[in-house]
Length: 265
Image: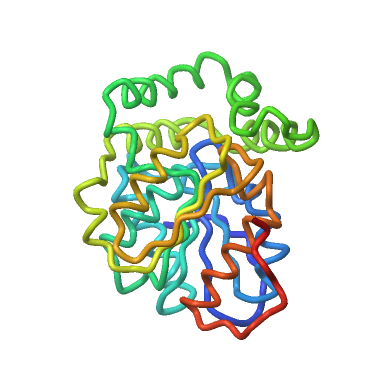
């Protein structure tokens, strides 16, 4: 399955970045700029999003995970995988289905899936109809600001809204929402062997700190970090703090040489 990829970095291990349900590879601009100094970074537009073509038929969570697996295989033997929100759910399923492809996981502001809560699952399933009714721009104007903390700068809010408006469309968004609504990974989390870093913005109003704690508690080899002064999109709202923690994780899991960086606590 063909997808659009943004690429940065020419040396080091591979880091694949999977965006949230209302975004695209543009969400990882800070990581493409900074982390590519240490690793080769790939950020995808998921199938049916932004510059990626629509899939030939409906995709469930396994389908999205298998598409990510194809990206890894086309660029090397394995990768470290960074997933934000819905992208984190895909990353977890990828690690469960294709453990040989996943060197480690970085799961940010994510959850075990909306299928863990009937009300959340119903709300997720209604999103496609909302997108069809409102169109991408109004849909993004309503949803985008909530992804950041109340104190996020206006220019970042605008960038998040613009990215969403340019990225989401049917049927890809509907496939993603249905996959998220059906997902409940709680039973398979303990089977995941990849060392993991779980991060969450302290002001995440979407999945919330509790959902990240569930992930951290169920995964065997896990570090858990709260990113201060960040909402649901911690990688965009506090990129310096976020990237420092990711680099600390990669220094251990990918045996990166010692660098002059210190996590911003």
